[in-house]
Length: 356
Image (cartoon, rainbow, N blue to C red; front, side, top):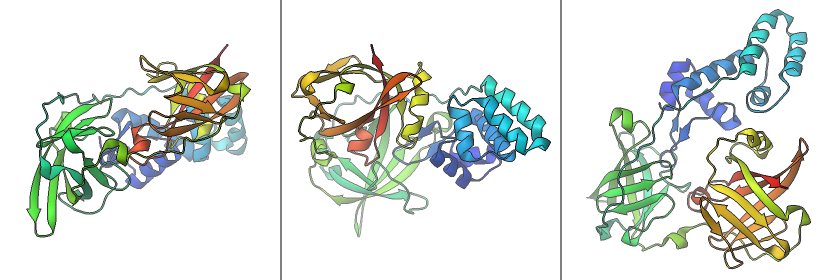
């Protein structure tokens, strides 16, 4: 459900949910990169109520974040709070039991999978750069249709960039977790060429309703995916770092908004499906990485220097750092995916454990 519906379910305001997302105490199950809409699962209302209860007995959002998402010692935290709020002892004891017992949340959303391997049919008029104006009903500026510049590109021959491709009359979307085709139509007006995309949001499988999104054409340049991609400085001299040499196995993923301090807590989540599986650092700046079932090998593809993995194949410099916690050694490395290269987003992170 969209954020407005979830706010009504919880009896709260949209601004509060937006703030909770920002500080990391309650994140949506899905944020649409095209519309920036947040979607929540109804079962998350349990988490919202837990946050409400913790706030009621005096915990700050920072403390709540630690309680819900890290291995903090609950007994110590609650004993300190009981000393200050004796009158709320019974509530605290119940919350302690509830949280210690854990609360599971299952996503009920089913990703939309449609056939998008369609034969390409050209449409010269659509090729170029388009500016997103908003939804058809309001036409007020709203966050991004594709990237942080509010722009969407239609590349020659239907070439994919990021998660977008096209054929005549359809914008094709492949996010890795969903695949679907959105119809579009164009209309020439006095001040230029306009497009309406009938976008299939996360609610589409339940409601069958699309969201009309309006764009205006900026230019008709024949861009390429490589041309519009964000590129880092990968021309860095080799500096040795003996600490990093060896094999590292991925154990968790951290999105850009989470902050690195939470990365280590993810190491215990073994069931996460991780695309980036391992990386091996060798003497002299050589390295190899396993993505899915594919190995990236050879100095012509990537190398490393102290503090960075330099991925030549997509012109990204992924910074890394090594931390020690609980007697274990962790590698936290930037993950510069299409969201970073084409969407203008901050980098995400992978967390690795060193293999002895």
